[in-house]
Image 1: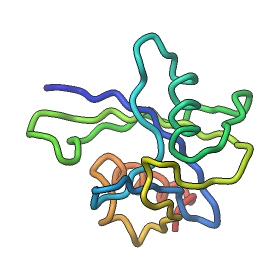
Image 2 (image 1 turned 90 degrees about the vertical axis):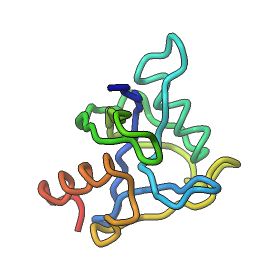
Image 3 (image 1 turned 30 degrees about the horizontal axis):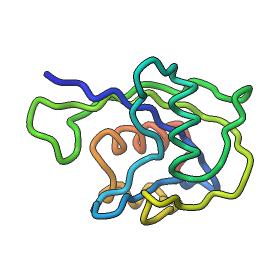
Image 4 (image 1 turned 180 degrees about the vertical axis):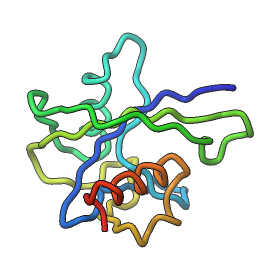
Length: 132
């Protein structure tokens, strides 16, 4: 099995989760991405969020939320994504960068529009009362 190691930022507002869709993709993803060589979780998460959404995470507020794993969307069988998720406050105005086609706040009813690992996260968020 091949594991794709990713980091994600869980941002909730009015029982909806911040999600993004990249150009040419048909699925929403929780914002984040892969770490570059030598990066810590914090460095990679802050860099990815800045690149995707043009905001700065407040490093002192970053808190581990959980790690989730599922088959990777659009990848061959045997490839899974392991998503290490964090919450954090931020500074700036959320807006899509050049690589992001759409930014949306998704309720639980949008679960069929997200990747397999995000579905697991959506279910967990619903169970703990963060997502409706």
